[in-house]
Length: 344
Image 1 (cartoon, rainbow, N blue to C red):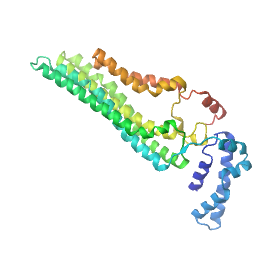
Image 2: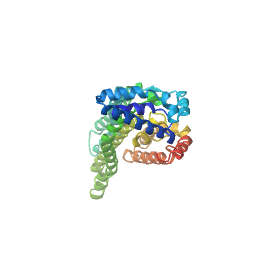
Image 3: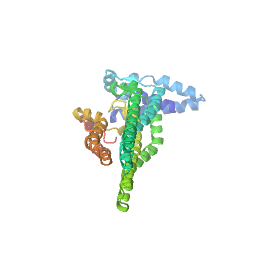
Image 4: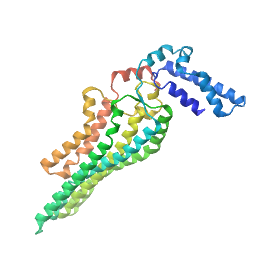
C-alpha cells in the first residue's frame, strides 16, 4: 500500500496545493485503496495487487476530468517542472554538505581563535627579556591560524560548487525521497538544536573567566591569559553555532526545493521552515554572514580589541533572527496562498 501512496503523491506533486486538489487526491486514494483491498480479497499477492491498481488507474491526465480538476491539470502541464533529483543524489548532497559544513565551521572558528594568539603573546611579554621572540611567535601563530581557517573555508566552498544549481535551477523531489529526508532531519533535529544552544551558551559563558579574574586578582598576566581564553571559548561557540546552522540549512534546502504553493511543497511541517526574502533584502541576506565576517576582521584590526569585537557574532545572530521573523515569507504570493489555504 505504501507503494500506491508514493505513486499517488508523485502524480499530484506539482499541482497547486488547493482544497480542490486535496479533495481530488483524497477521492483517488480512497478508490485505489478499495481496489487494492478487493484484489487482495480475490487472493492476489500484494505486489501483483499494487501493480494492477497502478496499471488500471493510469495517469492523472486520464483521471483529471472525472476528479473535477481537468483545468488544473491542463494548466500545470504547461508549467516547467524542473530537474527531478534522484534519491541517491539527495543523500549524497546531505553527506557532502555535512562534511563541508564541518570544514567551513572549523575555518571560521580558526579565524576567530587566531585573535587569541597575539593577546596571549602580549600578556606573556610582561617582564620578559625575549619580548621580540614572543611577539613574533604570537604574530606567526595568528597568521597560521588565519591561513588554515581561510583554507578550510575556500576548500569547502569549492567542494560545494557543484551543488550551486540547487539554488538556481528549478528542481523536484518525489514524495518518498522527501519522506526519508524529513525522517532523517527529525532524527537529527535534537542534536542540531543541542549544538546551537551549546554554542550560544559557550559565547555567553566566555566572559566568566575574565570577569572572575578581574574581580579576584589584579594581575596583568592572568588577565591577558583569560582574555585569550575568552576568545578561544567564543571560537568554539561560533564553531558549534555555524556547524549546526550549516547542517540545518542543508536539510532546509532539499525540503524546500519543490515549487512553493504546490502539493509537493506541503507534505511536512519542516518544509515551511525556510525564510524567503525578495528583492534587495534577498540579495543582502544572501551575503549576510560573509559581510559579518568581513566587518569582524576590519573592526578587530582597526582597534586590536579582540576581547571586545567578538560580540559582533551574537549581535549578528539576533539581527538575523529579527529579519527572519519580520520579513521571512513576506512575499505577496505566499500571503495570498496562505489566505486561500488556512489549514496549511
